[in-house]
Amino acid sequence: HRLDVTVEGRDALGKFLDWGNPEFELQDPSAGTLTVDKVQVDGRSAELRGSFLPFSWGGDSYGAMRFRIQLQFDEELRIVRQDDWIEYPPGLLGIESTAPDA
Image (spheres, rainbow, N blue to C red):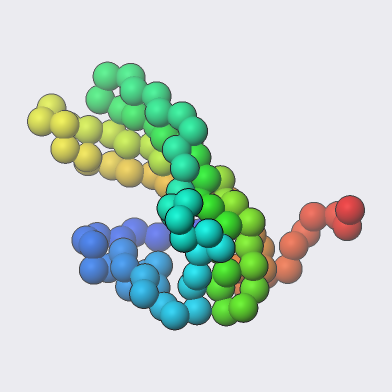
């Protein structure tokens, strides 16, 4: 499944991600929110790969979710494009998994 979303500005991002919702809780707050496993820079582009750490939402627990962020910079090294890929668990998106039972 693919979700295409355009968000401009910190407030709009916070609203889209529902920051501050009391239903969200990190399973280990001392571990932080995410880990970055790889950073690759090539000229005016960069790619970061890592994982959001396990969390609970509305009483349901979710494991780590992998992510990839691709950035493109202008001549003054300002971000002019950002593409994010996040491996959301289907249950978090309100859809049933299509993976075969283990």
